Length: 143
Image (cartoon, rainbow, N blue to C red; front, top):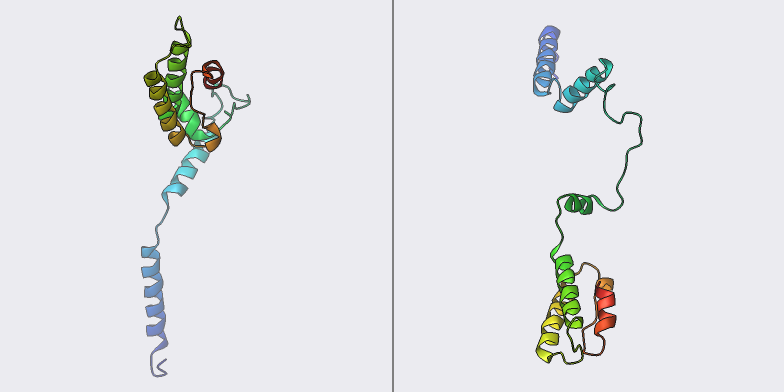
């Protein structure tokens, strides 16, 4: 600090620094504007005539993503594949002779089951492969 400096000059330099600091800071933030607009709306009674006012809000079970997908009628690919496999097994059971199922058809369904087992998000959802002997039991698990 220079002792020969005029105190008025150092005071004006400090004032100038504070002025520049104020110019750099935003005067108001968008969240502050939003909050003040919502507060004003509430004071003016804007929320008084809302439908279901005073009634409990129904909160869906499960996570948000599942709820959104359900509302959009979207199903993950593994769920669609599960339904397809169940339909294939039902078609095999509906044959006049369920014991005479060609190995190629069982193998095609087993390929779908292996694909399903790779797609499911949780290993506990995986299913066993089919054989001619366990069709009814497998259908009960897939349905």
